[in-house]
Image 1 (cartoon, rainbow, N blue to C red):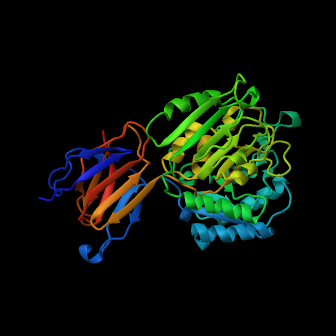
Image 2 (cartoon, rainbow, N blue to C red):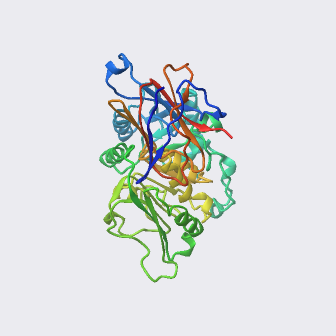
Image 3 (spheres, rainbow, N blue to C red):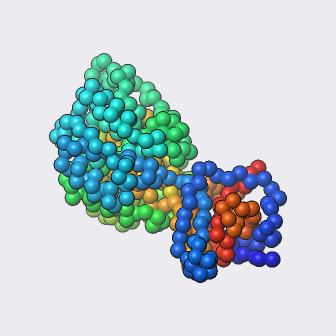
Length: 453
């Protein structure tokens, strides 16, 4: 009888799990495998496995480069340069790169021009494509919609009202992708969320891309700041800030601090803060953001009317966040009124980001009504998620993607179609936290499954 040792490390706490019976014994309970599944291969000593390498099937937790379309405006030199660099850094398949031509050097294009471009793009995309990276910085607006919303949802003439001073001041229309569990948005909802690889010049965008790549699977420990300011009109997310600060008071490795300056006793901003991972606030212009040190993969935004006007904005452009070292941001391109639904919900964003989803996925899922908002940043940045390593015959799985309260178990088999049997005791986590699973292995195939009810 072979026995396997499984150790579950929850942050600092180490929990020893009891070994189970013979690995040929079928499970006694009913189990439901988490779908869809992504496969991880890793190096080992070939002689131990007769030249074969073990594989681990884990729940799919995020989009991949194979599912991302990269859009190039061939009339825009910056778009061409950015797309070339991004394709190399992120290993975007050549067949996923789509070349189109539309006006450049302008902030806004008319809906008629956009609809023609959108039709060409839709015809060129394979159904496997789930999301879009836009390699240009201008235009960022189509009519009353942002260009990321227009590429994702399609341009909607009914969304714009006839009177200029009332554009956006209607109750927002919630998109189905909001706060969903989907990891395949086009398959599930028929939409492809998009994000702009934007910056004032090539160098800024290259640095943005580098930060995103550098962040991948680093499992950073950092601090997020939720700042309620004296600007009451722009501090409508205070309710979300309060609940989030309570929710993330755990051993996740991420500390969330709510700084409530609504009474004006302290400052409306933070300065000279190291290891900043998140920064959410509400001001027309946020002072001294460049004095803080942002971790690779950091996300920040400020609730204000037109932060999404990327160039020559009367308020602070979201590009200022990127210049300061942040990896993704969001802002509206027209006056949206201060509906919280039209801005990011930090609790939803942070939760999905912690589970290993990309910046694009986590951000899009956090905005209930993003029609007027533009998403900018490194699309595939993913500091958390799943990391698999093998040192001789010891397998290590590091995950932040497990759901609290659910029961999981590791199964193994000698062939992909063989009988999988448990090699660990069932385990669960009480709240979001990083888990390390370490065990000795002599099988070639492993699965992490969720125990059925």
